[in-house]
Amino acid sequence: MRPEFLAKGESLLEHRPENGREKAVLVGVELPGDETWQSAYSMQELARLADTAGADAVHQFIQKRDRPDPATLLGRGKASEIAALCRNSGAGLVIFDRELTPAQARNLEEITGAKVIDRTQLILDIFARRARTREGRLQVELAQLSYLLPRLTGLGGQLSRLGGGIGTRGPGETKLEMDRRRVRRRIAALKKEIKEVRERRDLLRRNRKEVPFPLVAIVGYTNAGKSTLLKKLTGADVLVEDKLFATLDPVTRRVVLPDNETILLTDTVGFIQNLPHHLVAAFRATLEEVMEADLLLHVVDASHPYMEEQIGAVNEVLASLGAAGKPLVMVYNKADLLPDAKFFREKSSPPAVAVSALKGWGMEDLLAAIARALPGRRIKASFFIPYRKSGLLPVLHEKGRVLREEHGNGGITVEAEIDAVWARRVEAKLKGQE
Image (cartoon, rainbow, N blue to C red; front, side):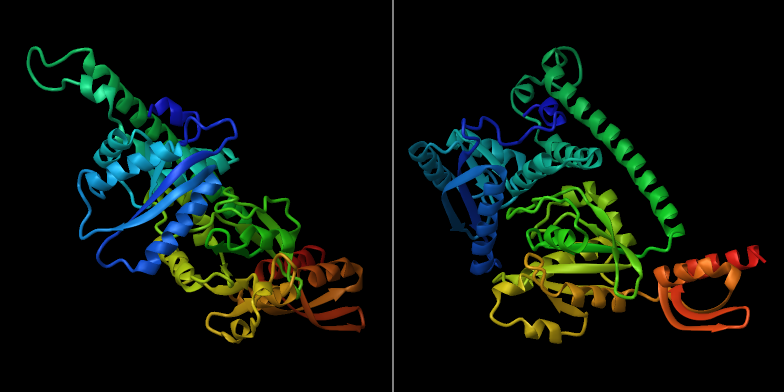
């Protein structure tokens, strides 16, 4: 694989047939300590990832081993069986559910005669095709190149004659080492660009803090319904599709809560089991929105048979980001697919709401739960507004919740729950107009 290829942002799944779908063999390896149901679920997820990437699984199996084979992960005998499967089915792609070392991938390609990739490469491929914004593309390319660098082998490696002294240098060094240097330079350039993105985000966050809108971040396992929920609550024009990682780039919209408080609601990239660390590192600039959020909405597919395991996977990523202790509301989505979702509403720590984002069920309950769960940004304040300054009264109604309003001689006495920043702004306008 050439570094120039990845720099163009093209797919890792090369040589697609005319219909755009590749035939693939999916391989899992179950080692001591792995539970059979976990391996089976991970393979189901791998099949969905392959489908999202544009590949049809023609065969899939799990091999149990006492330890991984250092040369091929699963042994040469099983690798030869995979080669026969590829020949008989016309599959040109083999996808492993575990991360392969460069040597294992190279050996397996030689034995099977097919392109061999692992789960990490498959997710990177999906991300490369789903990213739409410049920031998203930068982050995907960084993750791809970071993964590619130690795997730069092949003809250049065969020609390389590195060493010391006369006769050990030559043009054979050029191909592999130039590729490596080119990749390293590109990685350095990407990190610099992403650092600039992070600095711009920091500036936007500082500016946003001047406007008293709490930030609520939607997190959750991929395909839990986060984008559907954002679209239902805000009307945002976002892609909604029954595929893993259907959307990648974050979208932020305003939402008005029942108490008239305005919040900023932002969607984030979906999480998944064994999320490659390359992606967590590369997308840290985007995921910092989670760390900056005042409140997290953890959207869960309540109809999924492994719901608890998906919740655990999301919590692991949140912990790795340093966001584990943030205020949180559990949103049990797809409740319309359950015979009874009452028990979700009975959960109180953290607060929980059962909804159907697709059908619009429970949206009012969810907005009310958000209003209750937001950390105390509002204060209770009293204002005396002269009649000649009554134009400030709608501001209190719009930006806060008016508790008492009395009309008297010379003006209006108002008690309201309102964000401290807006309270200071109203007081400043009252004093400035005296």
